[in-house]
Image 1 (cartoon, rainbow, N blue to C red):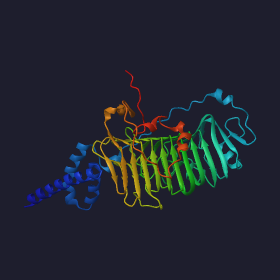
Image 2: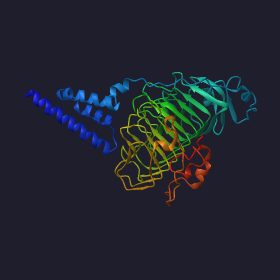
Image 3: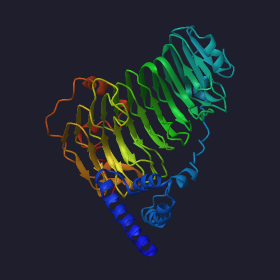
Image 4: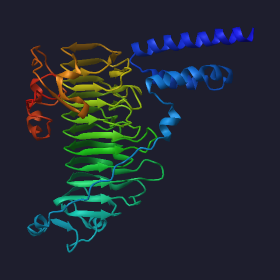
Length: 455
């Protein structure tokens, strides 16, 4: 009798697993996510766990989807940065600083960044000589300030230090511009350390590197604007799933243009709760051995323009969804998403979702995106989907090396449509040409146009 019960139970588990797998695939999930869910549901039921364990183990081996504890035990390797090479001829050729410029570096007016931060007056410019700076953390509280590396980039190693236990640099109460700075290895005890912590005012970041930090940039809810241009965010995350490449609080506006985000440790490449988001001309690729969750997470929806990006999810990521919109509840009065001319790549062979939209969102428009790999859209809202193309791997130059330039022409958009009134003005695109993946990107489906194949 017991053997019969075991056989029946085993059969029911198999049927449930098969049916569950089919259902998960339909809703854009993977077998690994189903097994993770089943593991949690079976906790506290030792007999069922004992029966299900060998079946789950076989399925995990076949699909190469390890258990959560196995994934957590795996080391997240952060490669060492190559040495910062400073061209001393550029440094030596620098003109003498003007009266409104405070210069930091060996032999300069200020030897440390922290000292310049304490001294600087509103409206001044801080110039930091290219080179390495260790543990030189700072709090900036001026009303208006520009801080930039000169003669090359200034590289800031946290060196186990932080301003106010928060970040390498903390910005408060002003409008700041940061250029040509590298923020390396920010870590604090609560796993929420950041290269930059922006608390109030506005922040513009240009041509910077954020590498190996728990968060690249972290904002409060009192910032008015965060704009990030032509910068790189690499190997972010504390491994807790709560720290990200960029984590934007519920602020008025966030813009990310022409950046490179890659290799996150269980967090998202971008997470933004802002009311308005413009994410364009970026490369968001989790790449080989990446462990990112979402590539873009807009958990409270709002208004978002996501266009002309290359967005790639690795087979080893922590989530099957590339772009998530409204998953944690709708915070804002207007909730609309415009998704245009992105190349969306899912490397997980067992399925996934290119875009997942929560119920309650007023409108979603998806136009002329390339979808590469298994998956689709899961949109719980009124939607307009025009000329989205299921692309084949062989259409691209070298996808195994993340070269998603097209070998042959995909027809330019012929459908007439009008972008929403809240999307960036046409001139805005012209202004950021230097940050585009390619100047001709807007002519073709997906972010990357045709590239000549060498014979």
